[in-house]
Amino acid sequence: MKRSIEEKLLNPKPGSKVAAAKEFGIDLTLLIRNLRLTPEERLNENQQAVNDLIIMNQQMKKSRSKKGN
Amino acid sequence: MIKPIEALQAFAENKVDFVLIGGMAIRSHGSSYLTQDLDICFSRNKENLQKIVAALAPFKPHLRGFPKELPFVWDASTLNQGTNFTLETEIGDIDLLAEVSGIGTYADVLKSSVIMILYGYNINVLSIDGLIKAKRAAGRIKDLNILPELEALREILSDEEE
Image 1: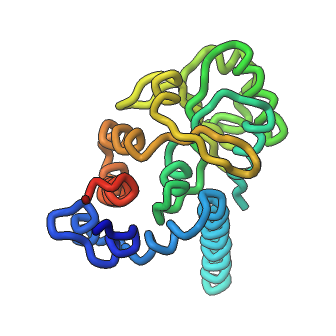
Image 2: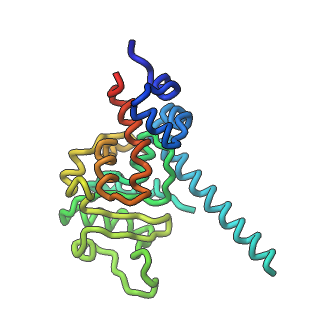
């Protein structure tokens, strides 16, 4: 019987590329989540996440420079 | 703030002949990879160079890593003088490549692409197979590290497992 994409990711077959990715350290639950989104939603999330990181980085730098004064 | 999606939309609006490659292509296929730049492979025909210039002009592109005082003219003639351009713009970094290692020129990259509907446009996106070839050829650690995830995606999306 054909397994769904989610089943393949949740229970990878030994020797499969999915099993290799899991072994490598890829979080397969994130793949499941991403594959539920449309390509457009995936790109929107990427942009939002990168901008959040940029803001966090700027705030950390500000905080460090305040401590230095 | 970076806004690579705006650049993507500008390319599509200006009917630029391009293929989305790199991190955003990887991401669009379902990977969790995070990227802050936009990479495209473009056709070097003269009309297309004019369209690229028009698409990016509002974002004030200049060469990344060079002093801002260094004169840089953003026009088709400049684009005609090279194949790969790494640009810094008001909305983030954008890389324009006329050739992709492991695949070839724009025509080859286009053949290795799939169409995705993004922001109301049909956009050519490098396929998972194409991305695997390109990343293998690039061969840097950061490129090789993405291969297990791409190969897993290829397997589950193409029914290779069965």
